Structures are given as structure tokens and as C-alpha cells.
Length: 236
Length: 263
Image 1 (tube, each protein chain N blue to C red):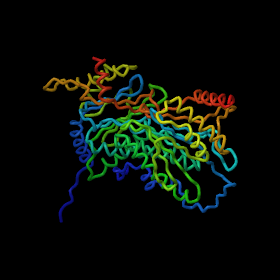
Image 2 (image 1 turned 60 degrees about the horizontal axis):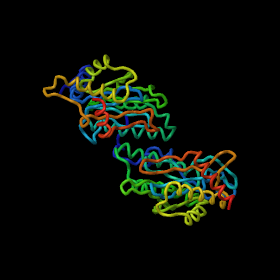
Image 3 (image 1 turned 135 degrees about the horizontal axis):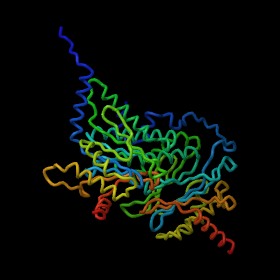
């Protein structure tokens, strides 16, 4: 008879965490920050159809990084559950806190399943209250379902901590759209300062989206390449 | 844990049918005991759509009837679906409004998941299946009918789709009107319609058609000058869907009334 092997829960948890950390280290960063009209989401992303930020429901958006297939499934599930809830009750009743809980429960259940691979993703659930431009929430969710509420700005991805360090000193309230995009792209450039080749964010390599309180019911807006070029042209 | 098995589906109606049938109407129990003079449900009356030079204008009166009574004076019958389409409904009000809501959610659901808008023809076809899902209701004589319009960006024209109770989909390239006063509105539009109408002239004939529908059909509401309730007008062009302001509509009716008084 072979001896059943024993691995301590501490060890299992430690291994899973290491595994996810190694995955997230490679993940491109997403910055979310509050600006004059709502929340701005910015990421370096040269792709034209695979996005890091997307619309979930009227006032709610999702920013994600890590494995695309994994966060894509959560994006779709989030839209579906939000639509079902809004259809059953009222559109206003779908909230960022509710969605965050939904994702959190799902991610923690997977992380705690012994033989399942934990999700190599990090999420930011973004929400504006839609009435005032400053009423916004940002929830950061990590692989084990842990989530926290962020004030004014947040970041996910490999170098998220460096981004937060920079933003602590450079972020200020009441930025307009151009200033906010400029701050975000300068921050993304700054964390790559050690790159062997000179590194510059341009309209073709950046993805910008926002939750804009001045819009009608659907507050999410993804900036087209033309709109992005316009922002960059006037910002300099 | 979240259920991810519906990952592939872009069909919100199907997801509700599979997972939440309780949230959809079940009409299979109806046994034909509704009597026309003993209504306990509301019916919506006249809605119309007119193609003009820059797109489509849709309009609907505001009245819903309950048998021979006025059931509701401010009901809205035209709803925006996406940036370039809108639906108008006539018939049994409850299921009508539910179809409009479900259709709107479905089209937006598709757009968010796929990242691109569902084509106008795709939307029109999908609506067929929603109408068909109310077949049981239709068999009881409780008809739910939509009129669907949109701006076709590819071809740069406004388009109108009408439906029959079995979900049949038919395209009209000029104008159409449905509901109890639909025939009266159509007669007026038939006499006044011209191709390449500009916006002002299109609005004029829409107002006249609504007036005639209310004039001839007892169920259709006209402009309510005392309560200041006017039909709603929705315009769909390449720039999107917009509502005509109440003041403008009031003025249009006032103009028509002056013209009628003089003649």
C-alpha cells in the first residue's frame, strides 16, 4: 500500500499564490483614475479588437489584466448576470458592489478548489453613480477573491505598485480628460524607464475608455483611434 | 460559483427561457375566456413610421384603452432600441411593453458581448422570433404587434419593418401604421406621402395622419390640449435616435388645427 502524501494547506496556498504572481508579473497594467466627468481607464494595448476595458452595464465597467480567456469569460458572465438582474428589478439596482461580490465569490471558489488552476487575472470593477461627476467607486479584485475599495485611482498588472507610487505624488483632483490621459500615459512610460529601448506611448499603442457622467444612460465610452489621436495632438 | 456554460450565447431571451422561465410570461394557460366588453387589460392603439430624406420618423398616440374606457392617457409606445433603431408597439399593452423591453435588452446585450452592433436586418429578424414567442397569445385574439424602424448606415436609408401575428416580417420602404387607428393613418399617409420628403414636411404629414387616426378611431388619443399630453415623435437618422420636444409637437398640432379651422 502506498502512503498517501500530505501537503499542508499553507504550502498549497503559497504555491497557488506564487503561481498567480508569476502570471501577473507578465500582465500589462491598467490604470483607472477619477477625472472631472467620471472615471478614466487607460492601458497600453496595441490590439484593435482585444480590449482590457469593457462595458458591463449602464454605469459599470470592467478593467482586467492577465489571461484573456479567463477574464473574457468573467466579462461575459458579468454582462449576463447584470442584464438578468436589471430585467428582473430595475436598471438602477445593478451596482458595482454587487458585481464585485459576484466575481469575488467565483474567483475565491476556484482558488479554493484543490485541483483547479487559480485564475491568473486581476480585475477593477469601476462604477460611477451617474448623477454627480465625482461619485465613483473602484473595486480591485485579485485571484483569491479578495477585494478592496480604492479611492481616486487604482492600478492592476505587473507593475501596479510602481504606478500607485507615482500617482500618490502626481495625481490631483479635478483633472480634465486630456490632463488625465496625459498623466496616465506618462505614468505608463515612467514604469518602463528601465526598458532597453526608448519607450513612448502613442495613439496606436494605447487603449482609452471612460465612464462619463455627462453621457445618457450608457455611461461607457471607448475612444476611437481618431478621438485618441485628437487627445494626443492637443496634449503634447 | 458563476455559471459560465452560457458563454457562447448572445441570445438573452434564450438564457431567460432556459434559466429563468419564471421571468417570462406563460400564456399557455389562457383559455379564451376574455370577452371583448369585459376587458381587464390595456390595449395600445395607433403607431406609425414614415421614411423621409434623412431617415425615419416614428410616432405614436398616448392612449391605451380598457374595453370602452380610457385606461391610460400617457402611455409611451415608441422606444429607442440602439443608436440607430427604434420599436413601436400596438396591441395588448402588457406583453407589448415587455417585448419592447426584452428586445432592447437583447440588442444591447448582443452589442456588449460581441463588441459590434447587431445589423439592422439581424435586429429585424430577431424581432420575428419574439413575436412568434407570443403565438399562444395571438391564438386567443390577444395580438401583440411591433413596428420596427432604423437607419441603415451601409445604404444610407431609413427602413421600416412590419410584422404579422405569426412573426412574419415584411419590409416597407415608404410608410406604415399599425394599431386600431392604423388604417386611418395609412389612408392619410397614402394621400400625402412623397418620396424624399424633408423633415418639416414629413413631420406635417405624420401630425395629420395621427390627427385623422384619432378623429376616426375611438380608441386612438388625439392631442390633449387640456392636460398638455401630445403624441411622441422619434426621429432616426445617421446621427442617432432623438425625440422631438413636446413644445415643437404642440406647435405642429396647433398649426394643423389652425389650418383645419380656416378650411
